[in-house]
Image (cartoon, rainbow over all chains, first blue to last red; front, top):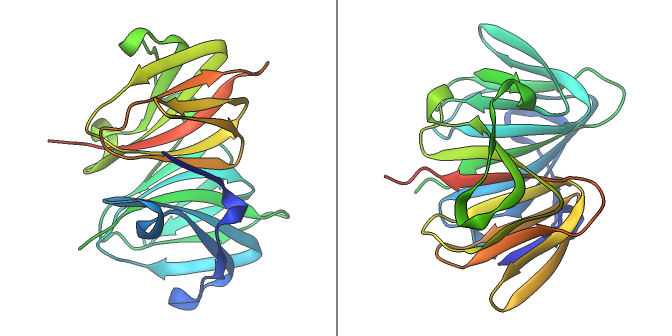
Length: 113
Length: 113
């Protein structure tokens, strides 16, 4: 069993897809044991965004704090603490912090070959 | 994309392995879209426990609130909010709430064939 606090893991700026005000910590990843799926913790600052993008991996998300919207080309959902999201493979999606405090969420993703 | 609040999903008592004071909500599972891994939310009441047990599926866990211990036959780790745990396949493990408020955690597990 491995255990840690989220802030023991490195924090990196997210620059993919033109993202703004967003960082990621890979809590459980290949370097510390994950074999088939990875757990990451995202922080999106107020006004920050991960723009619409798609990929083969699906997402399972749990919102820890903050407020925002999750969106697809045809859907916009208000999100806040204690909500979950499932984004199927290849569905375009993005996230925006519409609140005044950081939007923080856990996002689990398969480690595809 | 599917979205919901944790308390929209049914809460069930956990009775496996002689567990006490423990409930589970399957937030993202086969019935609402999960294909390869599932996200569950556990609540262990003060004094409650999921005793030592093992299985092929590995776990990726994020602690939301409360205090307790996670244990294996050779290890005991104090856990609290904002910690993560990785339990490899077939490693025996258990959890106990040693605090005064519910111990709440997210646990992601592969949907094995």
